[in-house]
Length: 325
Ligand code: UDP
Ligand code: MG
Image 1: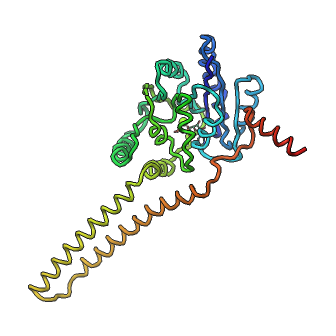
Image 2: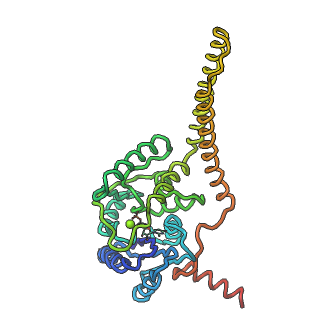
Image 3: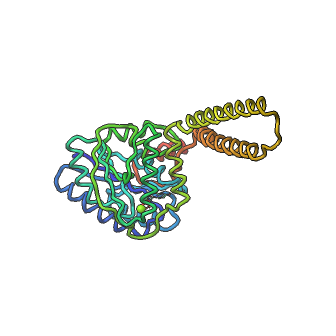
């Protein structure tokens, strides 16, 4: 029997956790009955401030297929998914959200596709129930991103996906600190299959995304996967230089033909403002990259484990015990 691991990152999800567990369990149990797949349900508690961890622990007590990892603080969903992929033992790993926005029944279809031979089976949601402005903004964003990036991103595709073991290993072989999963999933390649589903509202609690977070995420997306903003700055610099040369030439001719005249305040001030603006933006973009390099070179861990019931940590504890005694 192959092992299916479901990885569920949770941050303040105590109100939806039990329901999610039940639904996931139901689907996995059906797969188990078909005698093809055993399963584990791996919760990653990302430093929740409510009693998510207590809920998870009580589930783990009743059900030995429930595994958990708990972080020492909130490290973000990217770290949560990474930890889940690292600790998952399955031949097949499925990542899904804890708020039931990723309908667990799709896992069956995902596994069918996996059996056909796909390494990544991706669930794509529609944008039902979202306001028009947001829809339009996201569409523009993806158009722009796909023009400048060297990996392809698609609208509606998130982290809800099935990964084969070799796809997981490929993801884990990317050691970067600034992780942008959408890009990473696309970058590793392999045969992909997309299946569509209807968007669901989250069942309880609140989304952790506000406008500021989304904007930051959008910038992350552009910057973490290529250096085309830097290239853009070079082009912009060239353009401005060209315009300046033309203008200087024009002014020089003007002086030769008509002599020197004083008025020129408007052109002067516009040139100063425009160049100042361009320089500030450029410094900002370069600063973004330098900032990223700063985080990469520090090589900090991407998360800190506080508690878990996976075997890996038990082995570690044994080693610690031996060295301690
Ligand atoms: N999540 C997490 N750490 C965070 C924020 C979110 O593990 O810092 C989890 C959250 O519990 C949920 C999933 O990531 O299972 C998606 O989060 P959310 O529903 O807030 O995002 P949305 O569905 O609105 O994109
Ligand atoms: Mg959600």
